Every structure is written in structure tokens, then in C-alpha cells.
Image (cartoon, rainbow, N blue to C red; front, top):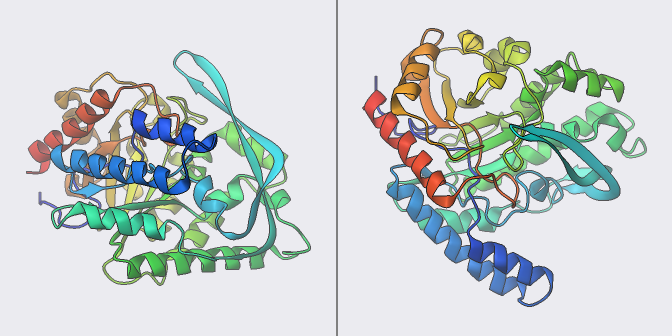
Length: 373
């Protein structure tokens, strides 16, 4: 077994982190006009400096900005693509947790113009992060995958006058992403993660029924998504490592889908041209490790064994046992360790404390050091 000097690292994390109270207060003040955009950004800057220090201090080799400048992990990016806008219609996503159920409501999106990259999305945000990490930590940028633009509304969200042929939509979307990838690499990004709930949701028969009911080809949707992600990253510069993270929903410690990776596993692991897969594996709703048998040599799997949905700390012995279980299907040298998802995919965050979040990240770093050296 060997140490890793490139992403994904033996001890890693998904991206979003709990927003500190000072930042939440500043957001509220900005919303009612008590402070201006520059004052909010100054608060964000200081919060990011502190959270980068925390990630280094617990022993991580990668650091994100916690997604502190975002309201949600995906829509803040998607709405900044040319040709896409929020609508007055609402999308409701049904979530579940250990105590019951809740619904998440957000604006629907419409594709009413040609999709273009009008700016380097999160470009200045990444530059700030990159300036904070130092030589011993790699700055990691997280963005939603191209699949997320389609999964939210399907064909019905695309104006047929703009895209009478859906193939043209996919070509423009992947081209916009490819340009985004090229631009962030030029800013010094060496670690890019494409976050994707769709590829995990599609393992859930209930989710596939929802897509079929709205007129999509749920049985083959994952194959289209794999092709389009590959098109988006095909021309990535040398030295840029790309991973994808797949989960079944993460909103205030709740989830939207269940089921193992079996439905998508063979095509996903053998065809998706990323360097590593962040996989949710924190409890029984994620299924077993058998689908990992399809992961080819050279690809890394980051086992999301530590839950972000609750504060109780896992034991090292349990984590090591589960790593051993996964190693029945894939060599242990192709494995890494992380939380199962972000701690705060939306600004509200999950139901745990900052101290519990730090303890989980430190546990991951310490366990990885004991397993892989």
C-alpha cells in the first residue's frame, strides 16, 4: 500500500462544510440591506481562511472553501450558465430522515437560450481559495455535473424553439462545461470534483418511475449522462485530476433516494472517465460493496463511510472493518476514505455541531494514516 501525492487523497472530504454563525448572520444582513456585497464578501473571506486552517490542522491534504459563498451546492452554478434561468414554478423534492419526512422546494429552471459559458463560474472564488492553502494542501473546486442541468426538469425544461433537437442541447452543455474545465485549470486548479446526485438516484426504482412518468428514458438515462460527462472532461489539461461524487440527496440530514449502485455500476465504473469516485456508503440505504467489482485498475474509490447526517462519531475499528469488506471486491490500494457527503449541501446545513464536524474529519485523517501509512 502506498501514500498518495495526487487527488483523491487517502483521507479526503466531499466539499461543503457547516457555515459559521458569523457568516449566516452576514447573509441575513445582506438580504435586508444592512450590509453591502463587499462587506459580505469580507466576512466570507475570513470564514474561508479559518476553515482552510481547520482542514489542514485535522490532517487533510485537500481543502475546499466549504462552499461558503453558495446557497446551494448546484443551483448557484447552474443559474450562471448562459441560456438557463430560474422560473416562477417550484420543484418539490421529497426527503426522508430518521425522524420522518420533509420537503425541499426550489425554483424550477428553464433552458430558454443557447447554453454558453459567459464567465468562469466560481473563478474568483477559486483564486481566493488557492491563495490560502499553501504548498502542503491542494485546493479543491466542486461544481455540479452536467447531468444536474437535465435531471432537474428533463426535456420539458428545454425550450423546443431553442433546441428542437436534444442532441444540440447536449453538445452545447458539454462544450460549456469543457470550457469551464479549461478555464479553472488555467487558474491553477488541479483538483476538480463533479457532484452528481442523478447517477445515484437512478439506482432507486421509485426515482426511475418519476422520470418515466415525465417522459424520460429512465432505463438508459445514466448512459447518456456518462457520455456527456466524458465529453465535458475529455480535453482536460494534464495535471488536472477529476473526481465525481454521488449521493442520494443531502438536505438538513435527510435523503431523497435509496438503493445500492447495482443498476448503474457496470457502465458507470467501466466507462466514466474520471480519476476517482466518491461513493456514499454510510448505512444500509447505500447497498453493499459488490458493485465495486466493476471498477477498473487505476481508478480510485473514496469510501464515504463516515456519515454527515448525524453527529455521533464512528469508531476506527468499524471503519477499518468496512474498508476490509470493500477490499474483497477491489484492491485496498485503490481505496480512500471520506465522509459520505458534504456537511452543508445547502446553507442550512446538517444536524450536527461544528465540533462534531471537525471530529469526523480528524477521525478520517487518523484512520487513513493507520490503514495506508
